[in-house]
Length: 231
Image (cartoon, rainbow, N blue to C red; front, side):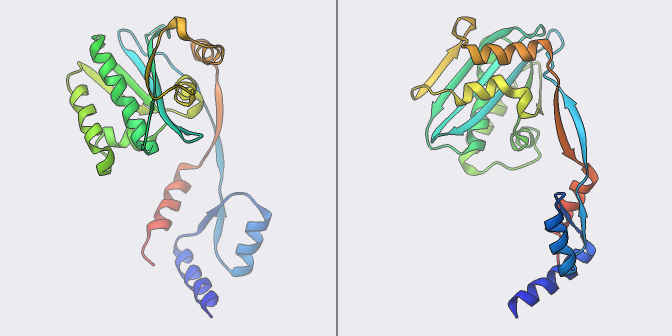
């Protein structure tokens, strides 16, 4: 009886907002048998690469990591030629992934301020952090203090911006975030680069092209609407 009510409610709800599913014969068969309207997701190929900033700007890539119960973040500053200025990686405790991400940006803002780099493009693969720093979302209380302190530092810059990048184009920061180091932080210079990080930096420098499949944006918007629509 309960199952029947669930199916009936789903049919009514999804008659207005169809279900978008991954291409799968099994899922399509079940949906058809239950009489639930659906559409198969359509994907488009997107191509991207890491881009150096225009002179006289600098670019700061950062990433947070929860790896084998080791919480930390990694970050790197490069100039308009794609050359390493400085990097940092840190191991902390009791932090969520979003808190680690904002700590990574905060660390970068402080480093850039110390180096008198006043025009900085920040990149992260966290859309949540981009929204927080652009004022399009509220951070939880556990991260709010660090977010406010980050904004205070950024307000002293001549100019700055933050944008989202995909994980592949954030590889050096990702490697540094996952690096096993003792609790605390470590500054990275050209002499400290290990083989894997050197290879990732070289790929960025020569402009390796990456490819991803991305769901149709209109379908994604409709899926979001159907998820939060009132029954």
